[in-house]
Length: 438
Ligand code: SF4
Image 1 (cartoon, rainbow, N blue to C red):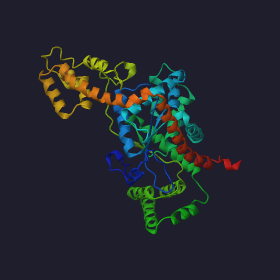
Image 2: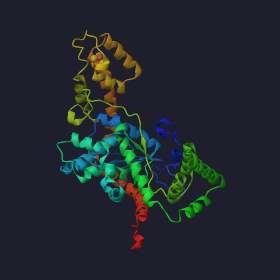
Image 3: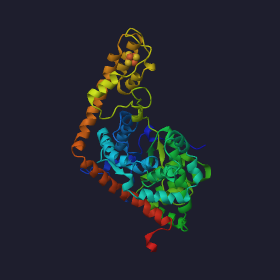
Image 4: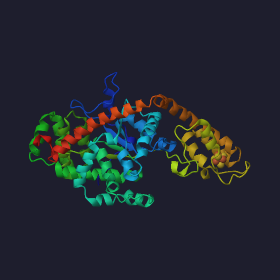
């Protein structure tokens, strides 16, 4: 039986991530794979431009992004094309929302000096790869993506019988594959999308990674390695291909990741280890991280459309009023009635914002009616206000100079396009579209 792929969130990071430690002093820009160094592992994630974000977005995604940027080469993008797949009739909202949303990314602590922040539509290579992948992706793969039918049913006020909506998981696949993203942070419901991306990459590599002189090229690649490295790769490959030994395969993959190779040599050797051809597109892994789920003020999922959200940069007075008005355990009609925190939406906020000592004070005080609900809400109000004051501080320079946000996105989009073009050069060549033929 094959060993389950390891999730780095539960593991010490591999040596690859240590490449970030070798950044020359004074260089704060994210660096890119160079032939002279092993590539850093990368993550990619995006958000549709929905305008100002709420605390559900922060605790559900952004707080995790902030941690990821410390560990990986990170690409975070504004998914404006994805927004059009469901909101093509209101494009004016998209432009309006981009800046607001990105200010909240920056307020959360996303650092444009460490991460590449960009706008999907400013990197047209995504569309090109989407188009090329669409040539060889079976229609049934897209029709069976669970969210396709679910969303059509849930968003029944919109006409989603469009080619763009059917194809959006393939656009997501292109978003991921074009940066050779190693990891994609997702919730359980998004795992099928990453699995589709892996299938698309495998099919593409199978169709276009075959080279007539592959064995000869592998010989040339191996000549660039040391004898011990060649020996280890050959033994591991044999153990994997002949006995299905996943540990051997993983060791070989790990060694390859740490070797200094050109991208083309790395793709060929990766494919050779798997018993396939050149791996032009790298299969990503889902990164299932534990994101805190912050429910809304009424206990349902936090959502602007439910009117139960707290904006990341809510006015402090407004915020206090909102939390004070929150419903509590319906059994506590009078202050003297004992309550049960498990029946109370305020308790969900304590789970995110309070430490163990406050939580036991709440449990005990609520069960014995020793505290009132206003007392109970106070530590949450204080904690949210503390958190928000940090958001305000970080957002302030960008609110004063919104053109800085545009600069960040412009610069990030250029960096992203450079990285995306590296993949596209190889994809075009493999598909017979290389300009050298003209
Ligand atoms: S004391 Fe706290 S946990 Fe208990 S019902 Fe009131 S607000 Fe909810």
